[in-house]
View 1 (spheres, rainbow, N blue to C red):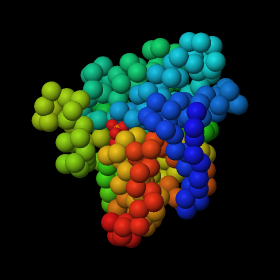
View 2 (cartoon, protein in one colour):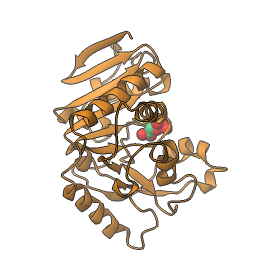
View 3 (tube, helix red, strand yellow):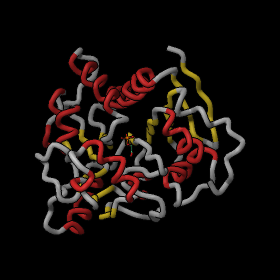
View 4 (cartoon, rainbow, N blue to C red):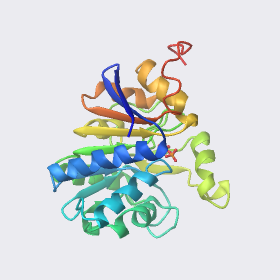
Length: 260
Ligand code: PGA
């Protein structure tokens, strides 16, 4: 596999030839973490981006190359108002795309509850569960077109911890592809905060496709600013960004204005 490696503003970048290879690299980083520490605590993400990574982890697990038997997981976020068995809930996504195909103990998998009666106390309890598990060893992230990480939209404070947020019109529109109509997309979510995410010992961000190229370039080469939350990852000492050729295509751009 041809893999280009470079460092930009202190962040290690791996650029794969295509989406499949970038997903293979990401799956291997996760598998290596588990092989080194079978009791790893993983932070997991939903969305289109990690699906091929999860498919590969399932294959590795079924081939006996990695075991999730002792792994604990915490997902980044969940829609408020969707029950765990709603097909578009992130709990249902994780069960369908990963958990039900691997040897993980479902009791050790955590997704915030979007139907908790008291959302504020659900957020607090999520933070304390992460702490009790010893913190997150490796957090997998996708990247929003607007620079969001999890549901931390532009303008989110860097010191935020698991909290209730309003989704932006852009995110609602983008996520409507998974629902019958845009009216069915929840308007609010629970998300790990930026500070929660930055406390993970290691972060692996995967971004795929041409549509993410601007967000990738701003994350790595723009200002570190809350208006592009992913740029705050540059304050973390152990981030690996995995890209395909298309998402990496604007990294050489000199046109990027510091404010863009
Ligand atoms: P996507 O979403 O993987 O569906 O592109 C990524 C994100 O919004 O974090």
